[in-house]
Image (cartoon, rainbow, N blue to C red; front, side, top):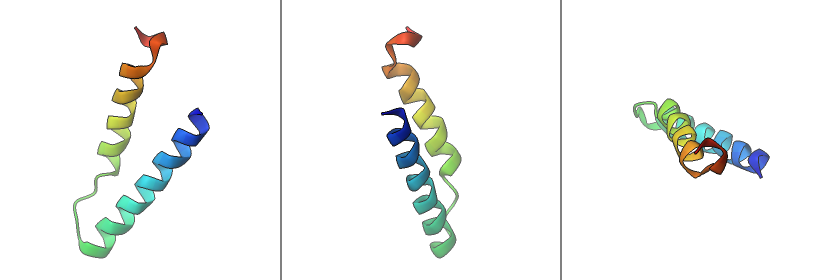
Length: 48
């Protein structure tokens, strides 16, 4: 399951990078990664 999450996150980052490059948008990939870590910490019972 974690592998699927990581692959999905990598795909989202590639799409965000492509969109940023194509349309001159501010990069958001770092924010995506940071948000993913925060969600993982909040939803992982091992971190409580």
